[in-house]
Length: 164
View 1 (tube, rainbow, N blue to C red):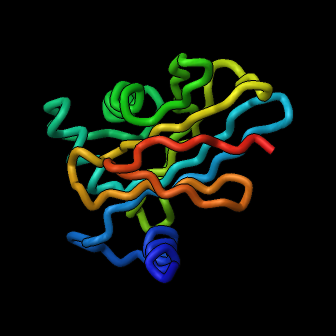
View 2 (cartoon, rainbow, N blue to C red):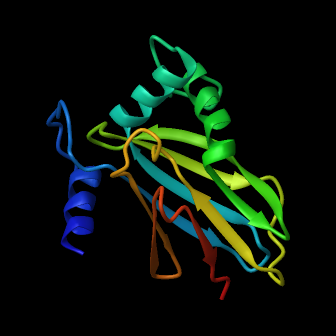
View 3 (cartoon, one colour):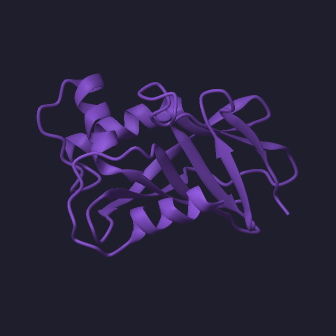
């Protein structure tokens, strides 16, 4: 629990201090599913980690996450289709990036995402998140939903989401 608290302070603090490297390999997401099955997912990913991953996977010299239509965000959208998605009735449901921004201290990329269609709340829902897991076996992806934390990783990439 201390690790999560320290990570939140580090990732969400307003400090303008620049850090060259960090030992913490985590992303943080908050998932909301409304009564009609509409997804609202906000994720915070360390900017240096996701930039390096997009450079390596897509050969980008400069990674621009300034808008939804920028090259870096488009590359990230493509990456997410196989690393961050829902499943329902055996069908993959992809996330769409609706907005991008940066944390106050510019250490994190903030993504606002949704699915194209609502989920069927009468059926089981699973979430897979392996963002940056191939880059570091230490990577953990924390998802908060209904006051419950799900910690996903390379060895635990998928979880059943409670809908109520």
